[in-house]
Length: 316
Image 1: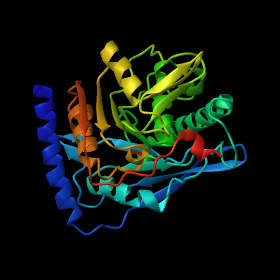
Image 2 (image 1 turned 90 degrees about the vertical axis):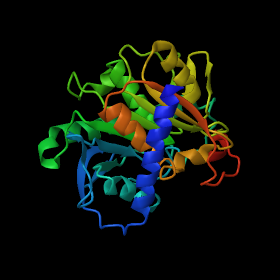
Image 3 (image 1 turned 30 degrees about the vertical axis):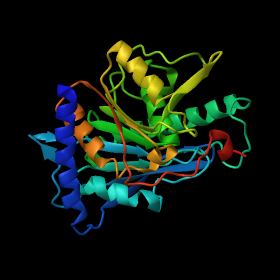
């Protein structure tokens, strides 16, 4: 109960700060764009958005982490600079965070698929996105001084397909697979924040050889696009936030999970509305290092419920 009280107090403070932020005029963002890789005839870029001028970039002498963001869109659509995310980027940069938003290959674009029958195709799409995220991370590390980014202070964040990508990338790092061989041996993300994410595997249920980075799961309990719970079928597994949180709890890995009552996949797009949870997690868990478990269900009417949709609906 004390954990929840501490969390509630931190969340209330963040809400007050965010309310003040919304009353201030948005400042122009400083943005630089870089080509970080060319793969499958695709040129992949990343945008670096600097903290807003005059914003608070540190707390108690500790620099706020860089946020490495991966957009959503079912691996069929989306872009690093989609207008939809601009308000979210402004929110973070106005609060003193540097944001890096990346491209990745959309391997399912234009395909008509059935999730179970075509599971190998889905796995290839996730792997391609993870490879691109790892390449972007390697580019950031190699150019850290020029970009003014501390490579040991990066939190990766994603929405929907992007959430699956960031969870999977951290999983590959924990298991030191060939996919992450381009990164320094000791590299780890400082934290992971998936909005409606899951881990997709074709080699059995997820199992971590090393402890995962502290993770903030945010997921609607009624999500049918990226399942809140998930399933395993033979060696094919799709584990959503609920199942992953259960695994984290069993193993004692630090995590927070925000379970949204009466909401589905729209949680993947409710990033601004979830700011109080994100900022509290970063400040308390990532920056202060108070490794703990926070598990709470919330009812939030500040954003609308989407029409019911399933994974199969996306790929008809």
